[in-house]
Image (cartoon, rainbow, N blue to C red; front, side, top):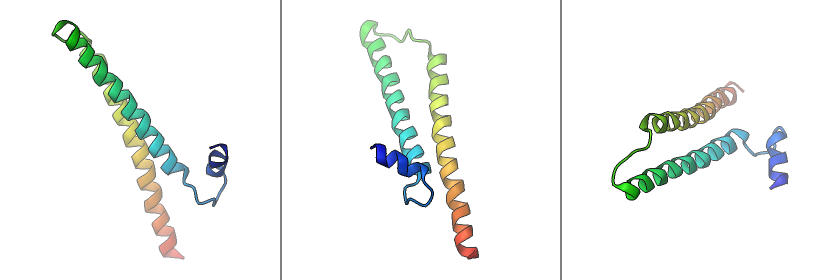
Length: 89
């Protein structure tokens, strides 16, 4: 694992740091959303109604969505520029 992380830092190693970032952000985001879902299920199962602050949960979900978007846009932008550089050569 340590060697893989070192290869992400090296230039032209064949490992894409942007892909790693995209996958890691996706996994962390899914984990956070699963926790939010578990909290909601626990809250409903405990007393039959939702007493959790839904505004706070919406803010967290919005932040996770922003993380997904930022990681995806970085990857798309870099791939777009990479294809232009290959075509110019």
